[in-house]
Length: 101
Length: 311
Image 1 (cartoon, each protein chain N blue to C red):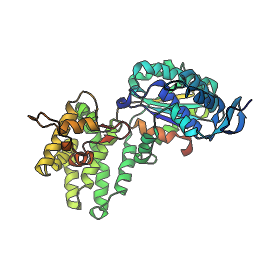
Image 2: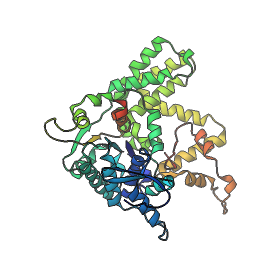
Image 3: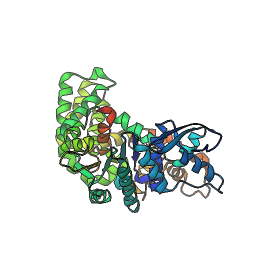
Image 4: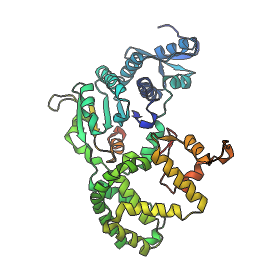
C-alpha cells in the first residue's frame, strides 16, 4: 500500500482495511455527516432513571438478540421495540446498551 | 456503539446519507484512525467545485468493514419519524451492514404501525418486542424524583407513601383522558414521555408546594380524579398570576404553537410575536428574547435544542 499523502503518519491494516491517522480527521468526520445526535443522546442519559425498563433484559427476545444465534437457530441481529407514544421507548434502549450489562 | 435519533422536526436534514454518515462518524471517532480510502476520497473531492459527499454505498461498505472489527451496537430511535420513502433505504443499508458483520446488533424503536416495514426491510432478521410502561417502572421513576426534592422539609413518610400510591393509580385512570387530549399533549410536551409524562407532571405539581399540608391538598385533589386537568390548571394559573404583559406574551405564544401547522422555529415564533396589529413596520426591537418567552410560559413550552423548534 502506498502513501496517500504527506499528512498521514502511520498505517495499520485490519480486516483488509488500511487505517491511517490523519491531521484533518475532524474535518473528515464533519464531511461524513453534519448531524450531531449526541445532543439528544445526552438528554436521554440525563433524564432517564436507573433500572426503569430493565424488564426488557429478561425477555427471551432480548436474550436471543443479545447473545446471537443458537436459540432455535434463527439469528435475530436486529431488535425492534414498538409501542404507542409516551410509553418510554426512547428511554428503554439505554437500558440495553452493552456498557450497562 | 453508534446511535441515531429520528425526529419529525428535523426530517429534511435526516436523509439516508446524513443518517448513515452520522453512524460511520461515531464508529470512526471511537477508533482514533480513519480508513485510508475515506481520507483519499475526502481529499480528492475537495478539488471539485462545492465538494462532493461520500455516496451511500461507500458509507455502508465502510460501516460494515468497521463494525466487523469489533462487536458493535447500532441504535436507531423513532424510525417512524423518518420520511417514509427513506425508511426502506435505511433498513436496506442496515441489513447490508449486518451481512458484512455478523456480531453487530441493531436496536430500533418506533410506533407500532411501522413494525411490518421494519420486519420486511431487514428480511426476517428482526425480533419485535411490544413496549408498554409498567406500573413498577413508574414507581421507580417517582421514587427517584422524590429523592431530588429541593424542599425535603415539606415531606414526611406518610405523604411520601400516599404519593407513591395515588399517582400510579391515577395514571391508569387518566390514560383515557390523555388520549382524548392527545393533540394538545403533542404540542406541549416531549412526545416520548406520555405516561411517564403524566406521572412527572403530577409529581412536579405536588413538589412545587412548600408545606406538607399544601402538598397533601394537591395530592388529594388528584385522587379525586382531577389529575391532569388540575396539573394544567395549576400551570395556567401560574402563568395568569404574572404581570399583565407576561400573561399576554405567554397566552399568545401558546396560541401560536397550538394553531401552527408544523413545529415552529424559535426565530419564527419570536418574530411572529413581535408583530403588532395595525403597525406597517417590523420592529426588530420588539422581538422577545427566548428566555423571556420560556419563563413566561412556566414550563409549558420548551425548545427542542437540536432542531431549534418549540414544542
